[in-house]
Every structure is written in C-alpha cells, then in structure tokens.
Image 1 (cartoon, rainbow, N blue to C red):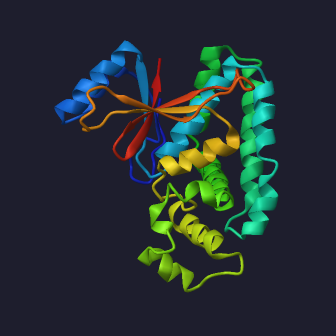
Image 2 (cartoon, rainbow, N blue to C red; image 1 turned 180 degrees about the horizontal axis):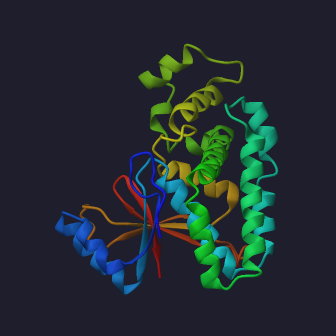
Length: 267
C-alpha cells in the first residue's frame, strides 16, 4: 500500500511492525535494552511521521482503531464532551474556525461508528488506515484537536501553570508578552499568546502538556511508555489520564515515546 507523506517527505502513518524491530532504530544501548524489555508486554508498534503533530496523530489514530471493539455509546459520549467548547472558544478569541473543525471531527467519529457496525475488526482497521492516508482531511482533525487543547489550557490556567514554567509572570518571555496585556486578564492573556505560538500552529511541537489538555476534555485514558537514556533501567510508563469506574468501556490509548517523538504501541 502506498502511504501519503508528511511535509518533510516521510510517511504519515506506517503499517504495524513487530516490536522486535524497534531496537534497530536506537543508537544508545540503554534505549536498545529498554526496547527489548517491552517485548514482555507488547508485540507491535506503528510509526508515525515526525512532523510536530505525531502526539496528536498517534493519540487519535489509536483511539479510532479501538472504537470497533466497544459499544457505539462511546462515540456519543465522546461527541458530548465537546459541547461546552464553542462558547469557550468565542470567549477566548482564539484564531481559526471552531465550527469547521468540529464538524469535520464529529463526521469522522460518526463515520467510524457506521463502519464498525458493518465491517469485521480487520476490515475496519484496513478502512481506517486507508482513510487516515488522506492527509488533507486528517490534518483538519489534527488542527481541531490542537484547538481543543488550546481552549482547555486557556480555560484551566491554574492547572496548567505548573506545566508551562515560561508563563510565570516573572519570566522574561512572559514580561514581554504582558506589555500587550488584554482586557481578559494577565493569566488568560499569557496563555492565549502561548497557545497561539506553541499549540495551535500545525508545525508546533506537540508535547505532553498538549496531551494532558486533550485527555482532560475527551476523558480518554492515556498511558505513555517511555524509552530514553535516563538512569532508570526499565521503560517508564506515565499515566496521563486514567479510566474511572464510570467509564469502563472507553478505549485506552497507549503511546510509545522516545525523546521528541510519539508512536503507537500494541499489546
């Protein structure tokens, strides 16, 4: 199958590969060793392009893959989590068209709901893979998810204050931004300007704070398996958002992180 490519020329989303092949991607022995340890609990992984949006793309693709295995109530639950965002978007005066992105995202979710009712698990996975290769349409989804994350960060300033140290009002960068302070208040304006530069643009590097904001809104469990050169001997698993008893059938997304990049990892 021919893959679409990202702007940097690499494939946007790859086919699954045996996890045993991951070791060959690393130079450092510590990362090789940790990748081998993952074989005890995981069997495959899926590489994604390193275009700044790999965190968003891997998160939503993994989530969509798993919809075929849960009740259609899940799609309706997810769409419901987005209802408060339009009013927040208008209040925050963030750039972009919220309605266009929202409609594209909801249509994708409903499309998944329709196809999973008529396709086998393997056929659904093939259909989703082919659909995700339309990079123009899939980019609309990523752009919308970036806007969702930005809305959450700007709305929950107190929570995200600890994740974004450069927005401390005493930081030089923050002081320069505050020179143009808006009527919305010091904290809110700082976070708006940060999101305009570090979250909303498609080429902005999507990192953990983006995923925290996204899962806060969507209530989708997320864990990140980390392979790095730290002194920790085994791969570290970071729980970003954990399922509750009230949400027992929500798909749990598991991502593989190596410094600067996210992929999807499978049991």
